[in-house]
Length: 181
Ligand code: S3P
Image (cartoon, rainbow, N blue to C red; front, top):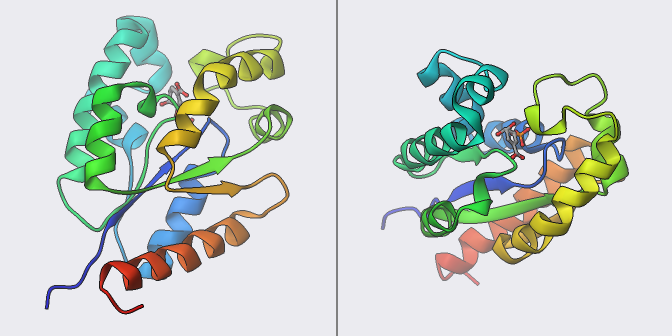
């Protein structure tokens, strides 16, 4: 029988810990880790700031759709997608078909604290970051909540603890899918 190895996709706002948690989960499962922002930057030979400057958010989102297609083409990976990826219905459908979605949730205050000093998030290039995050979360929060098969509250957790929660849930889901429980 073929093993059931669904792709794991980490979603959530910037600063939620998608990359750190994703790397830990991938290592624990012996899977390949892919970060779609890294794919976009490699393919464009530009960093995210430069893409936003030259092509606008629209250009970045076009590149993001293509990067997601490439990331999900090989099953079984652990994938971290950018915080805005699930805003597109096209991406949501593709990601849902590709595997299991995990929403890493955090409050605006936690997210802003984790992003102190980060200069590589063009959407947060403002003096009132908490305000901007709060505004964006009003629109995005419900989308993250609905899209996630699992929601992990990361506010008071280390990336290791969040990864542990994801792994426990994932192993249970794989057992269920394989009909072992
Ligand atoms: C974005 C999140 C970023 C990056 C881009 C836009 C967003 O990724 O894709 O700056 O719209 O939330 P991270 O969530 O990995 O920071």
